[in-house]
Amino acid sequence: MAMKNALSWILVLFLLVSVLNNCLNNSVKKEMKQKLAIMENLRKLYSSGDSSKWPKPILDPESVSSYAEIGHLPEITFPSDNPYSVEKETLGKTLFFDPRLSKSNQIACASCHDPELGWCDSRTFSFGHDRQLGNRNAMSIFNVAYAKALFWDGRAKSLEEQSRMPIEDHREMGEHMDMAAGKIANIKGYEILFEKAFGDKVVTKERISKAIATFERKVRSSASKFDQFINGNAEIYTDDELMGLHLFRTKAQCINCHNSGYFSNNKFENIGTALLGEKGEDLGRYLITKDPDDAGRFRVPSLREVSRTGPYFHNGSMTTLEEVIQFYSKGNPEHSQKRSTVYDGKTLKSEKSGMVRMLELSDLEISQLEAFLRTLSSKTEKVSIPELPQ
Ligand code: HEC
Ligand code: HEC
Picture 1: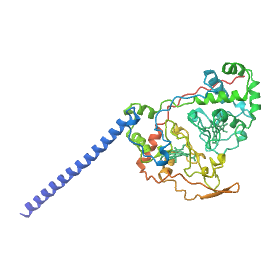
Picture 2: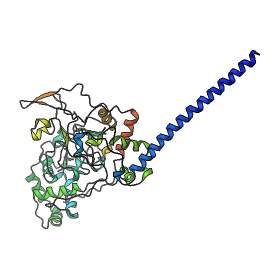
Picture 3: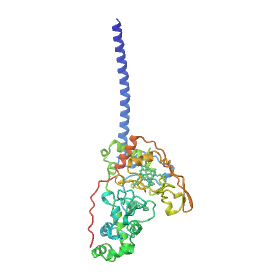
Picture 4: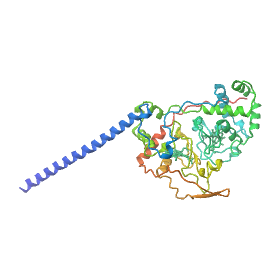
């Protein structure tokens, strides 16, 4: 009797457990199904080829007026006083790789902007003339045609104006522009290149600048995985890459600053990297404008090709993309940083942008954002190194 009783109890228990289990399974399945449906829907919208169908971005009020949706890079435009020609591009490329523009005849633009290293140099700080170290991380010249002002602090307004600066910088190429132009004029093999590019063989520093600028404008990314995905190649993205794209535009709010096809709003923003009052202090945009509001602002860099252009930030202080995303996720708490500094007798503060705040991203979300950032790089193309004229 007791035995029978126990058996029936076991039976009841078993039934109960299996019913419960079934319910639980159903709700897990339902949740999974819902998640899948959401993912499928996101995939459909983002790969529709029409960004007006994308989910709305989450923007802060202060970025709304300058916001442009992320997408493809537009066509390159050339200034009317320096129009494009193949011959000018060829001359510019040759000069870009020619170390004879430097005082030591050892350092070319390409020494610090190496096509095999994402057109920068993989170093925290570059070294130039006499192996002197600079104090900023070399920027890539990838897609530089889309930058509105050049350098981390925007001190050059055009590529034509910019190209003279590294030649004359005593820590970079250490040469006078007139001397450099004189040296190029004395190289017989350049005559034909100048003639083809400018109609006669006269070498001037303006022509050197124009040719280099023309070449740089053509250093443009080819279609990345991101471009292919938003063009309609729906299956090319993994689920993580897709979620990363969605996070970038929504919860993580990176699009407040990294937007348009160039992935930069071309503005100067303060994300709290000035290291006020510390060794390595860099006041960024302030050094050019002397406007106290600009203390600690740097140009928002493009994120195209970003997986190839580390280390990161104006001072190369971060080595991996994961570190950078962690930094944003924590809202850059700046524990050890001072709030003000005295520079040239002036007390300056550096106020971090209100758009940098705690995001509380999970480890999964951080890895999804990184996966997405990696899809902004194009395939490495072999760049032919020009033969130097003699
Ligand atoms: C010694 C290393 C070095 C050499 C040589 C060098 N650069 Fe640079 N380049 C840098 C560094 C570092 C920066 C960032 C400097 C800053 O923002 O203050 C930079 C920035 C730039 C930028 C700005 C990119 C942007 O997005 O704003 C351009 C363009 C550029 N260099 C072109 C050139 C050209 C052209 C030459 C040759 C005439 C050249 N560089 C030679 C290290 C170098
Ligand atoms: C308030 C504007 C702003 C927001 C929001 C923002 N960034 Fe940035 N980002 C910047 C600026 C400015 C720099 C350059 C800072 C420096 O060099 O000191 C930068 C640099 C970077 C770099 C380094 C690029 C390089 O070439 O060195 C990466 C990567 C990056 N941001 C990714 C992100 C991601 C991912 C998000 C979203 C989680 C984000 N950013 C949100 C303004 C912003």
